[in-house]
Image (cartoon, rainbow, N blue to C red; front, top):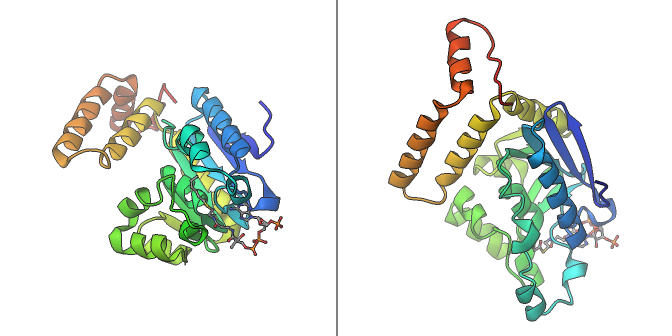
Length: 258
Ligand code: HXC
């Protein structure tokens, strides 16, 4: 497939999607969201891909939904077309691990898309925020929900109600970001993390991702029950047998399903 608003590449078992609308700081127009969904569908269907990196440019991961495209829309336009649910949640529904490699602005919908990913790695110049309030709207793709779960109420309210940006150091301190790296090392680090993940058993990686995500959807008792069932199911796979045999035999595991 060819895409107009993103670049798609692969590095071994890692799929790389680069948001590419430089003139608009990667503002997430409808066409870009369609492209992103298409690329994720392709990588998801490809057994040769074990992890995906989503990144932008040095200046912007994404500066939000496309304000110029949205500005004349009415309630009926956004309600009847189910704006946001359609397309946007594709990142969150991806079964394979997705790493957001964020440099520059990750604002509004850009911050929300980063939060739909499983791990956020930030360059030192990354800036996160939910500035929707300054536009007379509120976040619509998880900014009041995923941000609050990630940071807690005080920080989420601070960001959502004032629209201010936070830098990478603050984002790491409050748990939004898993690590910060110098800007020039961002892709190297993201590729190392994604490559490591993609070297594991793919079905077991999916078990792990689904189980962690359950923590956000259920009570502790139900989450623990789900985890235990997935843990038991891991023993039905050849990769459990290979992983444990390799340990006992002091050799690297050769997972079959990856
Ligand atoms: C459309 C955008 C854009 C956006 C930037 N641009 N952000 N176009 N939608 N979200 C365009 C600018 O209009 C400009 O185009 C070009 O990109 C460069 O931007 P500048 O503003 O000149 O750059 P700079 O001075 O460096 O400022 C960077 C910035 C600022 C601080 C990130 O661009 C900004 O505040 N952008 C809007 C951020 C925002 O409010 N995001 C939330 C959007 S609402 P021209 O043609 O003038 O050169 C949202 C809701 C999501 O995301 C809900 C779920 C779908």
